[in-house]
Amino acid sequence: MKQCDIPTSSQLEKRGMVWVIGAFVFCPCHLPITLSVLAMLLGGTATGLALRAHPFMAGTIVTTLWVAGTWRGLALVRSAQKYAASNG
Image 1 (cartoon, rainbow, N blue to C red):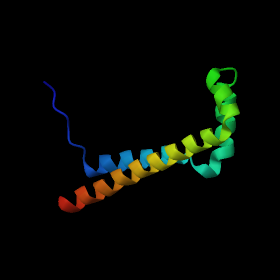
Image 2 (cartoon, helix red, strand yellow):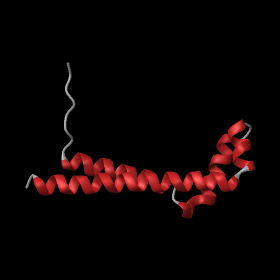
Image 3 (cartoon, helix red, strand yellow):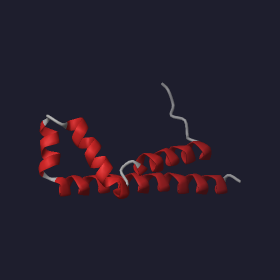
Image 4 (cartoon, rainbow, N blue to C red):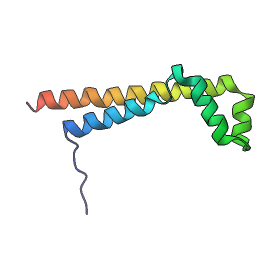
Protein backbone atom coordinates (compact mmCIF):
# COMPACT_ATOMS: atom_id res chain seq x y z
CA MET A 1 0.00 0.00 0.00
CA LYS A 2 1.39 3.37 -1.01
CA GLN A 3 1.55 6.18 1.55
CA CYS A 4 0.88 9.83 0.79
CA ASP A 5 3.88 12.09 1.19
CA ILE A 6 3.49 15.16 3.37
CA PRO A 7 4.29 18.21 1.23
CA THR A 8 7.21 20.40 2.23
CA SER A 9 6.82 24.12 2.83
CA SER A 10 8.40 24.80 -0.57
CA GLN A 11 5.90 22.54 -2.30
CA LEU A 12 3.00 24.17 -0.46
CA GLU A 13 4.23 27.62 -1.41
CA LYS A 14 4.63 26.64 -5.08
CA ARG A 15 1.16 25.11 -5.09
CA GLY A 16 -0.24 28.29 -3.56
CA MET A 17 1.46 30.47 -6.15
CA VAL A 18 0.03 28.30 -8.96
CA TRP A 19 -3.45 28.84 -7.49
CA VAL A 20 -2.94 32.61 -7.26
CA ILE A 21 -1.56 32.85 -10.81
CA GLY A 22 -4.37 30.64 -12.10
CA ALA A 23 -6.94 32.80 -10.32
CA PHE A 24 -5.43 35.88 -12.00
CA VAL A 25 -6.96 34.66 -15.28
CA PHE A 26 -10.41 35.06 -13.71
CA CYS A 27 -9.69 38.45 -12.12
CA PRO A 28 -12.71 40.79 -12.44
CA CYS A 29 -10.54 43.46 -14.07
CA HIS A 30 -10.12 41.04 -16.99
CA LEU A 31 -13.84 40.26 -17.08
CA PRO A 32 -14.53 41.68 -20.58
CA ILE A 33 -11.62 39.69 -22.00
CA THR A 34 -12.57 36.54 -20.09
CA LEU A 35 -16.21 36.72 -21.18
CA SER A 36 -15.19 37.39 -24.80
CA VAL A 37 -12.84 34.40 -24.86
CA LEU A 38 -15.44 32.17 -23.21
CA ALA A 39 -18.10 33.31 -25.70
CA MET A 40 -15.72 32.61 -28.59
CA LEU A 41 -14.76 29.17 -27.29
CA LEU A 42 -18.32 28.19 -26.39
CA GLY A 43 -20.00 29.72 -29.45
CA GLY A 44 -22.61 27.45 -31.00
CA THR A 45 -23.13 25.43 -27.83
CA ALA A 46 -25.87 25.53 -25.23
CA THR A 47 -23.36 26.86 -22.70
CA GLY A 48 -22.39 29.65 -25.11
CA LEU A 49 -26.05 30.56 -25.50
CA ALA A 50 -26.48 30.68 -21.72
CA LEU A 51 -23.36 32.86 -21.44
CA ARG A 52 -24.69 35.29 -24.03
CA ALA A 53 -28.16 35.38 -22.49
CA HIS A 54 -26.96 35.87 -18.89
CA PRO A 55 -23.77 37.99 -18.87
CA PHE A 56 -24.29 39.22 -15.30
CA MET A 57 -24.64 35.68 -14.00
CA ALA A 58 -21.52 34.69 -15.95
CA GLY A 59 -19.68 37.67 -14.45
CA THR A 60 -20.77 36.63 -10.97
CA ILE A 61 -19.54 33.07 -11.54
CA VAL A 62 -16.18 34.27 -12.93
CA THR A 63 -15.74 36.65 -9.98
CA THR A 64 -16.59 33.84 -7.54
CA LEU A 65 -13.98 31.62 -9.21
CA TRP A 66 -11.42 34.41 -8.83
CA VAL A 67 -12.20 34.90 -5.14
CA ALA A 68 -12.11 31.15 -4.42
CA GLY A 69 -8.86 30.60 -6.33
CA THR A 70 -7.13 33.58 -4.72
CA TRP A 71 -8.30 32.54 -1.26
CA ARG A 72 -7.08 28.96 -1.77
CA GLY A 73 -3.70 30.14 -3.06
CA LEU A 74 -3.15 32.55 -0.20
CA ALA A 75 -4.23 29.91 2.31
CA LEU A 76 -1.62 27.51 0.91
CA VAL A 77 1.11 30.18 1.02
CA ARG A 78 0.21 31.06 4.62
CA SER A 79 0.26 27.39 5.65
CA ALA A 80 3.67 27.01 3.98
CA GLN A 81 4.99 29.94 5.99
CA LYS A 82 3.57 28.51 9.24
CA TYR A 83 5.04 25.10 8.40
CA ALA A 84 8.47 26.62 7.68
CA ALA A 85 8.38 28.65 10.91
CA SER A 86 7.41 25.64 13.03
CA ASN A 87 10.16 23.44 11.56
CA GLY A 88 12.85 26.06 11.98
